Amino acid sequence: MKQQKPTLTSTFEQAVSAARAHSGIGGGATPRIAVALSGGLDSSALLHLARAYAQQHDLALCAFHIHHGLSPNADAWLAHCEQQCAALNISFEARRIQLQDAKKSGTEAAARKARYAALGALCKEHDVQLLLTAHHLDDQAETVLLQLLRGSGPAGLSGMDVANTAASLLHNDNLVMARPLLQVSRKQLEGYVAQQGVTHIHDESNDDPRYARNALRHTVMPALEQHFPGFQERFARSAQHAQSATRLLTELAEQDLIATQDGDQLDISKLRALSQDRAYNLLRHWFATRGYSMPSTAWLAEMLTQLLEAKYDAQLLVTHPDCHVRRYRDRLHLTPKLAELEGQREDQFDDKPGTTFRWNGETELAFPAYGGILHFEAAEEGLDPDWLRSQPLLIEFRRGGEKLKPAHNRPTRAIKYHYQALDIPAWERGRLPVVKSAKDLLFAAGIGMDCHHLSSGAGRIRLRWQAV
Image (tube, rainbow, N blue to C red; front, top):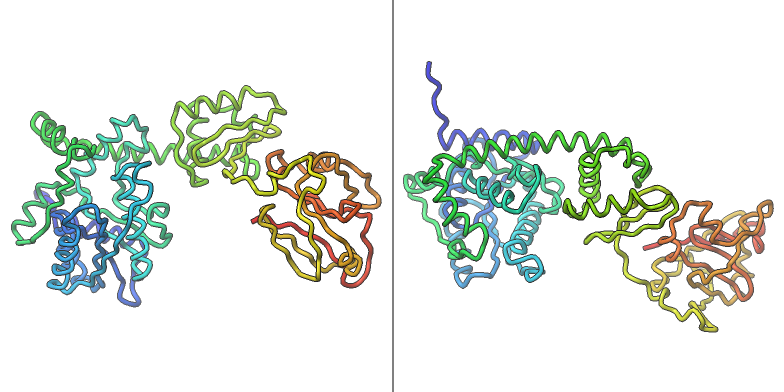
């Protein structure tokens, strides 16, 4: 018997049911799903399909509209969406947003980032676990082609997933975003809208060829359709192959990360044993797990060359847009870019450096100029509190030459030696303050107390530094 071809509705229902399983939406209280509604043809079709599905499966349906304020017609679009939802008895809410860093990243990218963040927030406020978007087969083809033109690797050529969490985009860890129309063509949606009498708006920005997607949509895609009919399905298959390859590369990277990781760092000697392609794959995955943007192949090549060719004791620094890549004692570190602290700008030749203060029994004192909080904790062995109250105290960053004796049975050594013994990297040492009395060093952050003024007894005080 000949198998019946899936309809638009059956394709949609199957995709949503799979996404519900992925998101864990089940029984209990009436589950809530949401539609991202722009008011255009695609999302309007999605809204009507979702309404029928929600009624059939006893789901609560919401529609969320994001008002970008970029078009003079934006208010009219919002009103249209609100009226459509009211007519269909669908819960509706809009959110107005302002674009950030549009000049830096471009209007398209800034609008996309702000839109998804707002959608994630709305879903959190309304206890929605599944968000449906109207991306379709033609959108997938455009995405693959756009990524190909940018020179992207397998991850970029994977296009859009049918469903994913996208927590970094939506800022919502409990939300699954699904694209149940990803196997449906724009032409099919046009037919559905005409058949169902669905009204929709037209966003004039979709006609502007200055935007890359519009240039592809109105110029390149029609030419491809003319000479290669049905190319969208073949692009989608290629995207699926790229997704499979990406999953395999991720599995390999996870294995290599386990094999090369030493705490939060990577062992350079083990990284050196990998092939170049495998090392690139591992480093990209490592950056992704730390939430940093993906480095380019050229940047990776330059960084890897510097890191692997440097001497064992080299303290190498490579700057990434999101972080610093450092090498210390044959280990690779990813460290955040930190602003200079006010205390680091003190005149090193000033007769009165640092910040003087008195301790009056507080459990903690904040020192923003030094990037942290100094805690005063009760201990069986520590500083006599009466003596400590009587001392004029000084907090400052190390000037060189300071020495500390951590215990009576241990020698007095330069702080630099203690840092080395404790394997504290040089870039961290510059942000670790010391605390002194009028004459003596009492405490060094990252190391501990000097033993010269320590004594045993109830209510003794020990210092502890907490970076913030």
